[in-house]
Length: 205
Image (cartoon, rainbow, N blue to C red; front, top):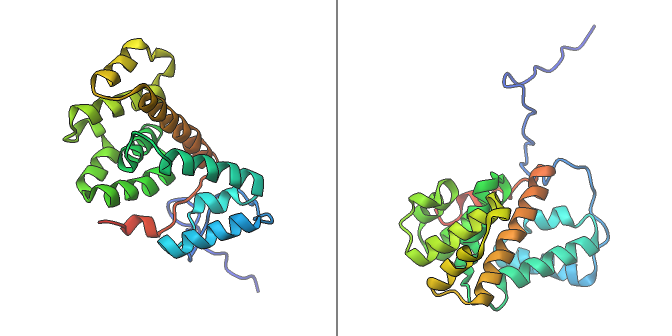
């Protein structure tokens, strides 16, 4: 007797994994991690309670993971004239322009945590121009958005506007580097359908 075939979801979409732990749509098993990267994963787990899925995705190759983690940590956590919150704000605005689900979820949570303002986080995710921003932050995010939307149109006057709002030339470098990194990261996350850890969704609500 033939067994009944399982019914397809009416939406036509694939069923979500029951454990919600899918990292990405590519079947790339983790490679052998160095002692440093194993310790880094343990540090993440101890500090925030989980290993971010972006790191788990890059763990397919230890060299790629190290390069990504080193660049990210220098850019987002290293010395800078930009605060950690300002760098996370740039990450969210760039990711909003690129409609990157992973980065909007992860860095939207970071903005909520660092600012203590869930409303600001939601504004930056949806439309930063509607947020009650001071002129300095508006200029910073306008530059990051323009660099993401039309990089060929960035001119001397755009950099001068940042100077006029108190940013040093080194700060301008850091704004540009942060925006550029997340344009790359957004495209990789979208290309492989990277999924954020479920924990991000409830943080700092």
